[in-house]
Length: 602
Image (cartoon, rainbow, N blue to C red; front, side, top):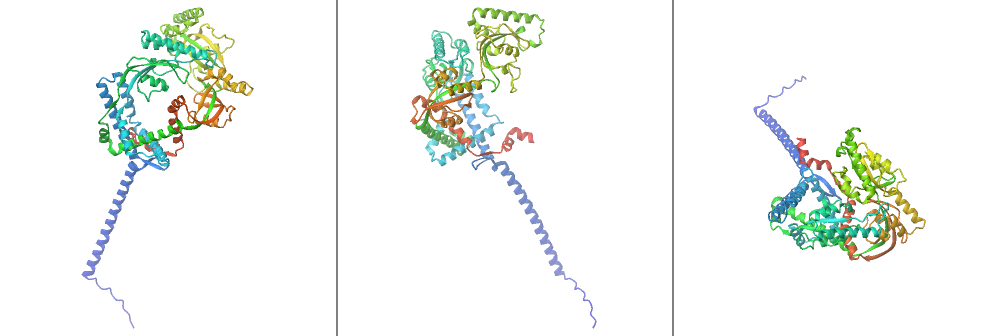
């Protein structure tokens, strides 16, 4: 049987049409899917870009995320607040309530906050701090009502009374070469302060007396003690003096003399009084510029902080706390580094060739200008050996004395180590560039009060020095004090001899000390010291210090102690809270938000 291959049937017209239709459908579906994928990809890129630019976290506080948009919103709100504050000050200036100079100072300070290079970092810092407090409030049942938010908005709208304050201060200084301030030193300072007050009450101009008092004042707060325009909360002085300043009835009235916690004696005047101002359009203006909800959230954060501050003060300021009755020996850590060696105390004037210290190194030794400088120095030495009390007067005469830095203080130079006399110190800081003076004053065998022969410094001029004393370095002096106490010297006796704190004259007695009155390291050292014992030495806060614990008990602070605590407790408590928070920040992303960074990237 024979088989033949069967030929395939010819396709009909209908089958061809069906195949073409199917192919078209497949192609359409393929293109549709491709387009959908492209759109999806573009959408994903858009969404990812949006999230990266807006919703992406830029910081987190204990797991709570802060987005880029939140930072932008806060920056915009801050700018709206700053502009409204400037508008309020402008209104007060136009009413004649703020002088032009004070107005310019206030506005310049606000404009510094508007700096584009820091506006976002400031906003992020605010949001981080607010998150920490909000979390604390939530876990400690601190709630904020709408009424409290409204009250905070009214506070924001109110510019507190401001006064232009000037203060004359007389520091209680130890009589060189002693380090410790005695009762006699305190009486001397009080007598001087009362004398300056009497001069003003007798008709002498305030600024003239302020200039006269400079040698007795180690404070650096403003030219001639001019604090500028300030409200009471921002005035950093002891509470009793602040109360007296804001109780003055009229410009140019003067307070009595007050003793500060640092041992200095101060009195003050006000040259202008700017009354409280309430901006009735404050809330609407801020809300229109940055959004009502954003501003209320900001005000709620402010109210939350105030509520927490009130609760912390109620607990640690006016409430009963575990307190320690302490004595201290505190020694200023000095201007050098531990191990720099002995310190010297002196007064100094410099007589430069052609009256130019900066140009002295370029003047030939044969130049007559050097002979003139030597002649002026010799004349000063002769005058001072007849009457050493003239030193301050001669030093302040800048037509003769060419050293400008110490001249304003009567030529008085603080206790400093030899290292600081060099051009560059061991820590690579700029020194006094007076090595020949260092060689002379650290030579030894010089009696206190000696007016030394002029010392030639080829890079400056002829230096006239009154030698006032030589003493060991700060770390050595605190070690010597500890050694003396450990070998039987009474703590009070050693404090009167060695301590540089304001309470040295009363044996270092600090009175009762509450939580947050000391630094955390100091508190831990005191807590670890049994009653009747002396703590280990601590360093920090500019001092070396040891404490003796006289007594420990749970008690309520007296009014004087409470006034001190109100100035420090919440700030130190807040620092502790912030140090314990787990904070993450994307610094690179924050930097990229800066307008200048964005411009550079394009």
